[in-house]
Length: 266
Image 1 (cartoon, rainbow, N blue to C red):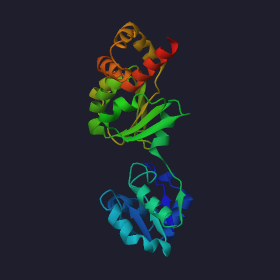
Image 2 (image 1 turned 90 degrees about the horizontal axis):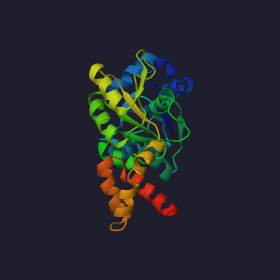
Image 3 (image 1 turned 30 degrees about the vertical axis):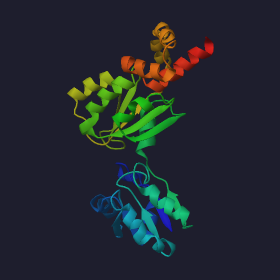
Image 4 (image 1 turned 90 degrees about the vertical axis):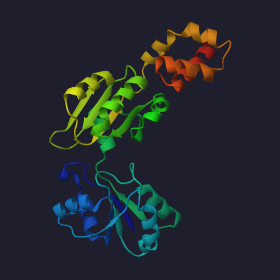
């Protein structure tokens, strides 16, 4: 059987009794980095055989241990938090599903959920987009939910600069060092946070949380109603959306939806 085990994201006290029992009983533990996992297991007094399972070894490891999962117990852990979140653990779960191998999850800490709670942003709907990818900012800016992403401290200022272009007027939270001594959640606009980053050195794991789109986007676009009306006589909606997106830095999808609403009410 495969056990997918959540581990602490900072504070060692967050590991569950059930997780400790499982990690103590399995024959093998699959982990991202043996050095990181050995520290965790040593603190827990657990001595287990570790196998490296990460982006580079996933395919080879699945091929190697696939049949063993029918007769032995394996645990899958990540360096911190829940496996399968922005890591290749899901591929092993898919293998179990396709080959009728038993598996279960031992829930634990999640940086995504913890950051959402600490940010104070709306939590009824949220979208996790993995590690920050500036090439996708224009696309995800039109998503009607709170947006969550991971980022490295060395890139935070650069990423905030891109966020300021595509997520204008929105509140942002930088949540870092979750569950640790220096845990903090810093809030403000992207430009305000950039100024803070220039003064304050950001360290540790960082989660960025962005509030959902607000009526301010529609207010901004309403200033272009006359231009939109004129352009619509010569250009299709998708071309107008691209042109206005370059001008306003608002995502073309949000502009497209706005123009469609104008047409509905015309």
